[in-house]
Image (cartoon, rainbow, N blue to C red; front, side):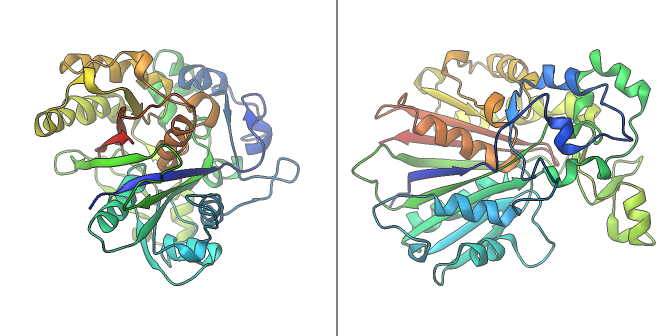
Length: 382
């Protein structure tokens, strides 16, 4: 049997937020306008994004699970489809609304419908693809009649001013010469945003639309040789190990140490992420599947910032797998960096853009800086 993506839906909370509105919604740190916001936005190329925040009151408007459920409700793989028809629900996210129970259980509870298998996948950006791989394998093996896979992020809950600490003026001044500093904790607030998407998987394609046949999904981790780069719920020690929030003497101490914030090791990220996830990962799949760049009609990458686009392209060229930029598709500028949900939000726009034709092959690229992992996925339009 096989697995086909027959529908993709997206849920983006509230109205789009422009670059000049961000700080008003997220709040001023220490009551002072950011010196770094414009520099970071110039490098990341994002012009609009979405927040699950009421701009008038500052109140949260949607939970992470709630956004995933909304995306699933928006699916229309066939006339009359309802959540009660779902047989397998796989849900990925970087940070669920709570530690327990599992994220998929909370999405199912919000979504309603009937009894079904639920699976939660953790991680960061790759959590969406691990969920999709589980769903595709279950459908392809005939274990599930269908599967709905969601990915969602409510990053704004980490980005509000009340959770962000003091910004070192020296590091802020260095940002012009070192754009990668934008990925550290106090600058990430200008990088991340909220959103959700859902994918419907079936064992046969729908006759009334274009479908995406899942040819293969490959995921590889380099954690055996790389230290942690992106993390939340801990602080990084000088030796590269993490001190988890439960190792602190009290929760108050953990909070004061910013252990609960999302952070990245900017130096490690800048040095290693693209060499590891492209130059050291892609060749194994090129060889395994006998891939040729001229046979890829669309390269569909998730990257967190426009800063990385040219670097990715150069590394692909360096391994003899150059795909011209006119065959790349991204909507980062208008939809923002929504972490695990990004790849589905990109795929949904491309699938419904009218640009695809039968037989097109899509190579999707999903890097994760957590401890350096990457996912590649090949899809064929049928």
